[in-house]
Image (cartoon, rainbow, N blue to C red; front, side, top):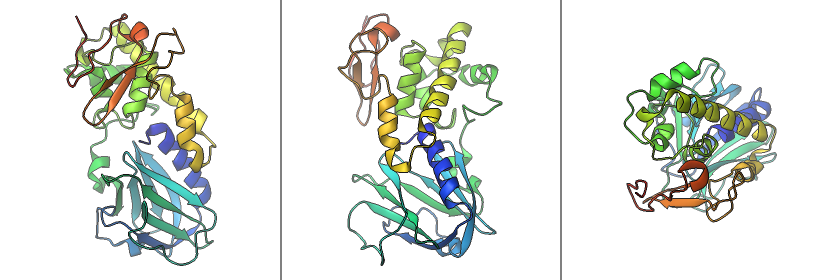
Length: 287
């Protein structure tokens, strides 16, 4: 799933390639992708793109005097830029194509989604806050005003495990499964530690890990073409998706806890005092 750093890089890429150009056609190709119907997608056509914004994991294309095109790529969605789109309309129902946006130059992009779950979402709205997922977002962790005091205030009273708290978009916007693993590894903290139990020193350490991990990932992704962002993300991960590999910090074997629809990775030596986490749903530290 694209998370804050990759969506930020896509925002920068689209700002460079879309702003100042006119949308001539928007073609929804999957019934599931379009989540709004008023205004219609045709309201975007013949309008110039004036800006591209990011809200958490959402991308917002702003048009001159018209609606916003807001996209959430979900777990299996992606954006593919094409300097020259194929001639003629795409064939519906064939392949992963969900939506196509064409510019007056002949360039444009496709939104695709692999698999069968079909969670990729596109909204055409007058205001991004009309999108429920945007309206409920918590603060952006890279915002200038997101300081350690605000972070500590968010975690105070949180009875959830810190891994789940970091992934809650209404608490903090933009962090998902991969970067929560990375942040906790940098902070040397168990994913199952209760958020409310953090000491001031642990909170400070976690805040620093949050900011540096995301900032460094954004810098690695900056200037990378849209088609190479997935590979760039994977190359920069230290524990997530690296089950069985040596931890780059201490050399211990990276372990995994599997759930019904996801998994987490961690280093026992760095994060749990050498104790493995039980690999079952609702796991707790082995006594």
